[in-house]
Image (cartoon, rainbow, N blue to C red; front, side):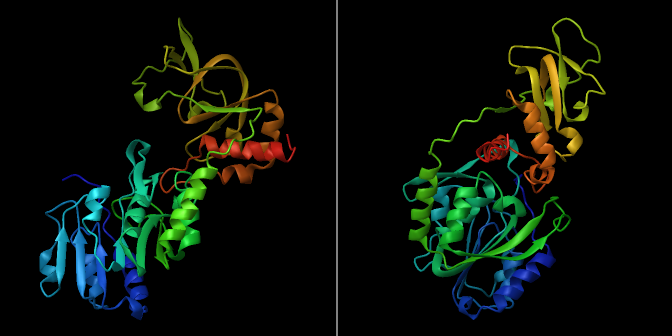
Length: 356
């Protein structure tokens, strides 16, 4: 079975074991790892802390090493933890005292996952999906240890859920780990501990966050858009010279205009014109890549953000003066990126403060 599998390295496993060993309240209950692979991490934990029952789950039925648990009261499952109905099959009447989650990080195609929380349907990243599933299974006194990408705390997709959870539970950041700890993924991660979870408070706060999202925003005098041409799908159709039906094409590699490229326009390409600000959406921002251009017609890749409006000169001056703030809007546990929403919010803030 081909799945994303990031086995927990010993360095991170040791932090989990050491922290659990210092918490006497966790001893004697039910412990679970819902994406357990072989179960080696749980074996390390129960070598130091005794539990009355161990629950292991992995969607791949061939990976759990049952020989590691011959002397334990073990329940093992091969369920899809990302499926709400399947996850509820893991329910224990008394709830879990300890849950370990090291969820997959990949979200190919920027896929969003849905979870039903009370009467709400929440869209989230894949990582938060695993956390939400675990929250529905933990006991009132239980503790969840999560190994998650560092950007979960700045993700726009998850910000409302994270805000509500931070108010309805205690979230401690135990240790941050740089790239290179996982052999199968280049990702910055953080080990967090969630405890004192109040489900009713979370439901209430989450409902308030969702309702607030529908409040009307003050319209800006600027328009923030992105291109719709994937550089990876051009298949050699870039040209160095103008020609019939060819339009100037701009990607992050030729934003300054030193190198000219053209592509043949078709009906699906989003065409821009006039004076506007260009900036990268993906990659490392530099002040040289905050540029003002003025062309009759041009097309940009989906890695470029285009800002139009009557006062783009003033806006560009403000953004360059406030460069460190603009740069801080780029984040990501793999490639750095920003979003239209982040840039829109920054511009609205400038406008509300009468800076432009």
